[in-house]
Amino acid sequence: METKNNSEFLSKVNAFQEEAQEFIKKSDKRHAVIIIASEPDENGEGSRQTGSIMGNEEEAVYALAGFMRQSQGRELLKRAAALSMAESLIKSMLNVKKQEEEK
Image 1 (tube, rainbow, N blue to C red):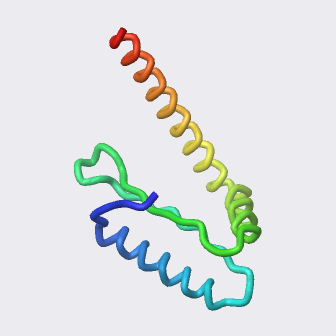
Image 2 (image 1 turned 90 degrees about the horizontal axis):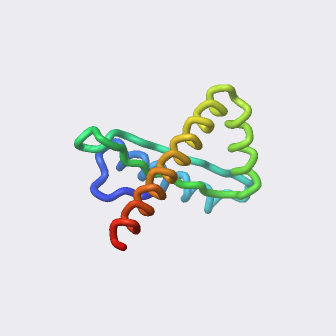
């Protein structure tokens, strides 16, 4: 999810990711961090994202499960899944149309 030409916001998020990764490397405990950040793109027609999953995989699963148990987290994940499926469907339909036009 890494972006190019980051804004100040995404640059700060990326700096925090690096800081968290360094802490995790030095730690003997099981830590995990999941970061997801987004902002509108320059023309306001889309968005730019960055994110990462760092640290102990089991702890990352616990963190994500905890997020999903929260009502807000559950609703956000439902909306994100619906958006992802809609985008995939549209791309698939456009691909079929393009293939038909090329025949």
